[in-house]
View 1 (tube, helix red, strand yellow):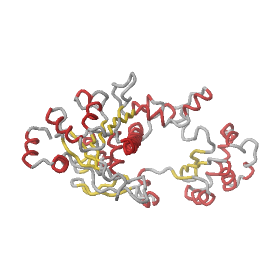
View 2 (cartoon, one colour; view 1 turned 135 degrees about the horizontal axis):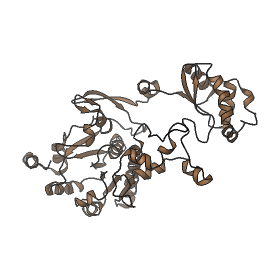
View 3 (cartoon, rainbow, N blue to C red; view 1 turned 90 degrees about the vertical axis):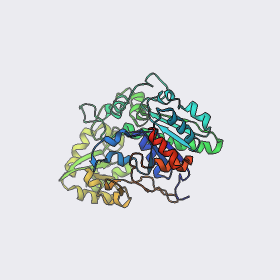
View 4 (tube, rainbow, N blue to C red; view 1 turned 135 degrees about the vertical axis):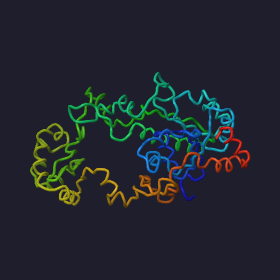
Length: 395
């Protein structure tokens, strides 16, 4: 195999972010992803800005490595065509509101009778069970409902939405994990199954220690700014020319840190010698550390702390991120050629495999760019048959 998922064929009915993010991960790792879009309309995110030569940079950033085929699933001929295609694919992914596929007559219970080995993945706001199942959801809504906003923001400030769409992205990650897990199980049992992922569930799953803090001690976590809720010091400090993030994750690093800032007396201080004590006495410790950090520049502290083995880093703006030598060395900013937008820079592939590395082989597709190609390849249709489907508005 040249790629890890070579040979896996995926029909992607998803749009906007959670579903497309999941299928992008799988496409990056070698799966053949055919993105099914409504004729003339396509994925909603094709209309999200910013645009380059009329093409959405948003859409391009999360739909690379996919082929686009138009298909109208509201027409009977479109449904029949879809059912024929299902026989030839390993996975179907959708992120419609629960019940949508069933109303089309294309729910999992129907599709598994056509292909018993099919892995059917559904990413939705609240999942396919529970009292909220049929409700509509977007990222900001699940960030709010899932508790994430309540622990994000400045101390004493209002709950704050995380800067990226982590509600969608977390659901995309878990959906990809679910699909890979189901495929692994299928390789043993020969049977497919349904993967049901809810954005709200995923928000609860990534709350880290917030639920533990509440259930263990009755404390309702609140926003505390950029410091860690349990580890001290683990927050930004003002240097001479801006802020630097410093993370002292254990007592061994604490010893190195104290020596590095020339405050060795803090190591055995009865108020600070353990993390529990440092946490309890944060208000006393922070001014002491702050006084030392502001004596040097960010770059000076980076060099000093790196040498000592103390985790640290600047708070980079996005323009600095895309130029960072580590980011560039790891190929996390890549350039792809789009037929209309031209050369476009997008995030690279974060999963580095030694034997079967992922690769970006194509830019995000134009709407319906591969319709003819897929119909010929998968179903063996000739030009006349394909033309009739276009003429009837099926594709």
